[in-house]
Length: 184
Image 1: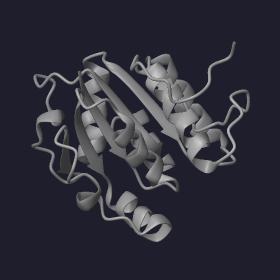
Image 2 (image 1 turned 60 degrees about the horizontal axis):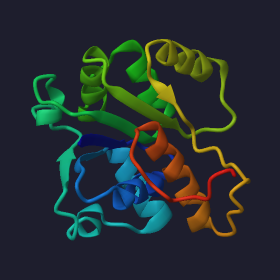
Image 3 (image 1 turned 90 degrees about the vertical axis):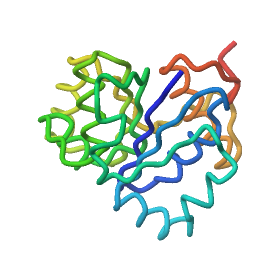
């Protein structure tokens, strides 16, 4: 399986990195971070992305400005895409078809090819424009799955809460996992 993971510049960009770290090693990952995502990671977590993935041979990192990357073409088959977190700016661009970055170009390609896409919008509260954008994308087959906690699996720590969210996103992308306790 091949998956594109876009991390845009919303608070919680570390969720995107943790998502990638928990992916099975047999999944080929194409990782793209926006400039704002890199700023958020530095401010919120003090993280250097390249060092983070040195030990992950299945992860290829692309610059968001590299619109010539393989994932910018429909003839390069990628099975699934997730943007986590998805900023309201990225959400709006995806909704109206603006492809001015690798993240939004890859999204447009996945949409036209009718492949699986999940967006994890990260904002609260949501305004009417954002809700309309999410509705429009949902009617086009995009799965809208913000990081909303469920408390039935008895998470006690931030790490357990993140594993719950990542497990739910894996479920939506049909990636087997046991990252959280399921309802019995």
